[in-house]
Image (cartoon, rainbow over all chains, first blue to last red; front, side, top):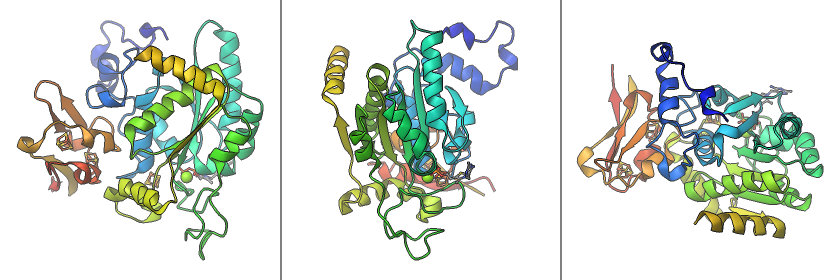
Length: 285
Length: 66
Ligand SMILES: Cc1ncc(C[n+]2csc(CCOP(=O)(O)OP(=O)(O)O)c2C)c(N)n1
Ligand code: SF4
Ligand code: SF4
Ligand code: SF4
Ligand SMILES: [Mg+2]
């Protein structure tokens, strides 16, 4: 992206909001910053209305800090708690009708390839578990079948959080939630394994409990989608409000689930993707 | 009354763990000069996540305002 596009014209500095000025002066665009640099630059996420201790807000913050190319990234979001944060995000983003994010992202990526054939533009669908594994599953799966060059990231809080905490396909079996007063009757959907089987070149499951490994996964998800084909990253984002635990326990919940064996970080990488990543990651050292 | 986190400056070693666990952007800032963090209290939601991770007990939740 041409940096002059967001720079403030001389003489107009004082009428622009302070947050915008900070983004222009101290934002991460074109500086190759990452999670380790958080706290030293103006973040791509601005003050947002998500709950105190929200695992999804923390994940989104880390994901945005991990983008390999934020100035040329377009995020396609969907309805849900994350859609309340996206108006506060300093990266091009589009809100799509609930569940349509991968269809919109596919069309967008194709159009960008035609319009800017010489440029790298990353298209990343970021949506909740309901939008990805339930209501938008059709659009998600078909974008994978068609081998679209898009990255899909699920913010998995294991419920329909934004509508008050109903069960989703990603809620663990037995969990008592709205619409599941006696406990959910079927197991959590194994979407990472489904993604691997239908041909996603890179698949990973991570969480904000491990910020740097999560950063690596985000980068791999985007870089492989750019060069090879569809990729999928599932991020576990516990929700204190609907799972009714204290906001300071969000990360402890992830560790507890890991101990119980009901949450596992993992990666599935095709040979072709592994070759690419080895090349890119060696080049970086 | 609001709850926000307070930093006991002398205890902070600048490990930055609190910065990586906070769900709020631009709240905990790291100063390269003094190698410590500073809290923007007005933007803190008082969730307490940073308190749980600080190895030096440099952070504590406190009431601010009235
Ligand atoms: C087409 C359509 N169907 C249903 C809804 C109602 N709705 C809004 S948010 C939501 C659930 C979102 O769940 P998820 O995708 O997991 O996101 P979360 O809020 O948990 O982050 C639903 C069902 C809608 N807005 N649009
Ligand atoms: S309801 Fe849950 S997921 Fe939504 S903002 Fe609140 S804590 Fe986050
Ligand atoms: S976690 Fe504690 S010691 Fe580490 S930077 Fe934060 S306040 Fe300082
Ligand atoms: S209490 Fe929560 S919002 Fe406030 S600085 Fe700590 S982690 Fe961030
Ligand atoms: Mg959800």
